[in-house]
Image (cartoon, rainbow, N blue to C red; front, side, top):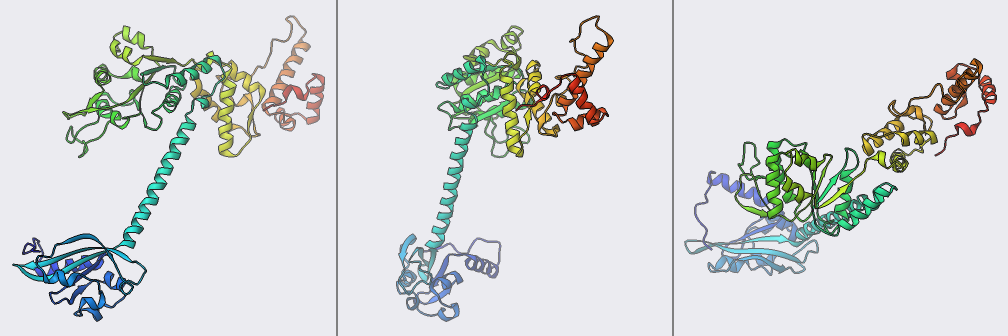
Length: 479
């Protein structure tokens, strides 16, 4: 086979020869050059290792003495020899030293002006190929296993069954999520900050047929308006200063086949609302700086803490987009309207902390009572934060009322348990009893610590408890 002469290079003939020699010697493939007489003109170390010879002993010798099945002598003589690429070659017992019986061979004739110069062969040892294939297969199988396990774990974590709450409102919402997951209509989740809108969005995605595809989240309030379009729709190369050379996919493309969760949709600028509406109507996007329409199959779940109907009335939200998004409404009630869920949530958060830190902390009964009376303006998020704070501050394994923030708990020093007009002694006795009981409860029933804090002898504390009829049942902490 004729090859172009001279070789295009910036190197001198000597330098390019040394460079090629470095390439051949560094390769783990075998390289062999045979002259027109069938003698070995060059063999690299990898090939020598394979057939178990020393290079200086075989140079100039007939190749068939070392490799009796070699076809290179024919290739070296015949300018018309048809080149071979990745031909499977079976070696005989004399040709290999490591039990590798098959190799892949590239062979060709090298001619100049129609005159044969050499036969050239490259041998790809199948053990290397198979080892690489095996490694890649193992990695691929392991990655596939991890991906499937991640999907399974995500489906378990975000399962509807894992939405905490026993109130009639939450029970009804969970049923609605299961029913809604069976279709692909847009869903609008409305609820105050901290009610768990994203929890319901995840549950909705993993309960439906799109569970094996991604759910992609974007917070419309957290991204500057000038960047929101490129985040949603992506951009082409050179679309703006600083754009990546190969462009970038937007959230719609990343969510193709799955779900796009538009959090804080009520804060989306009006200009972007119009572009979003067009995408929802056509099912196609166009990257920033691009001219090609890209079809996307995405289920839209939106969430907001605003009254979008009022936003529409005040011209801050497009009415047509509101109708497009609000096909299936899900309204999450605030925590203050479902008090029975407070102990369930609080104990679940505490159980997570106990598992994480290998502890057995629990709430006193009066602590839970106080939490149930609080209005929780920050909803579930505020409850979780306070449970974490109390967990960090507790010292004796019990979360008592004194660990709660002042907004939840104000200790009562004087209770209205005495009759107006009563004697000073009766009033003072009531106050003293309340102080003693409050301090004992705050210390988790530890009488020694309570006496030390009140700077009285422990025997004195016992006498006062007996005087006021305070028993362990009055301050016993229960999990």
